[in-house]
Image (cartoon, rainbow, N blue to C red; front, side, top):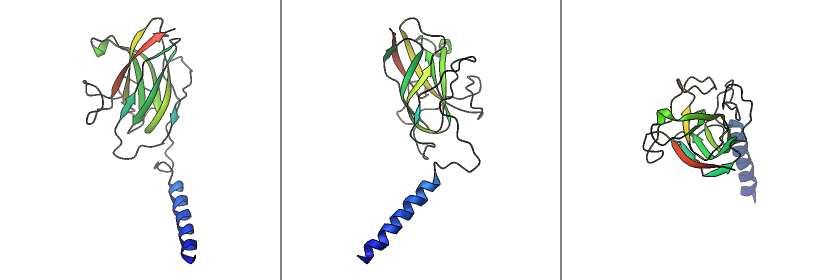
Amino acid sequence: MNRLRAVVPLAATAVLALSACGGGEEEGDPAPAVGTTFASDDSAASSSATATGSAAASGDVADVEFEDQSGAGDSAVVARVVLPVAGFVVVTADDGDDASDDLLVGAVALPAGESTDVRVPLSPVLTEDTDLEATLYGDTDDSGTFDPEIDQQVPESGDEGDDDGDVSEDADYDVR
């Protein structure tokens, strides 16, 4: 009985100490805004991203899950994103030939860690069935704004990603 009384306070102290540590961010460093979108310069649409961790543990492998879907053509949902650093999930209309010809149709800023059900506003709005590609980028310049000229694609590690060496996934989008 005395042993139990000693163990319970120790366990409670450990839980409190770990919860006080937070997401591993240093004091004074603001967390990147979840839900900031950059579909176009004049777009003010919101995201329904749910971040399940504010910072990725060291050794997290970048991953993206993007499933076939249908909708009105104004947004796409990326099922799961894992970023080892703060960055973006970027959606392009994939022409299947040369990636440099792909049209940027949406981007959402995300913190490091795992996010699920990330809604990416699309601009221009899709008017016909389209092949889309979701690609992960790091926020190279820490600006919080996606810039395809500055921000770098997150490289694949191991067998993640596609044949181009970046972390991306294709999905068919059917306009209803």
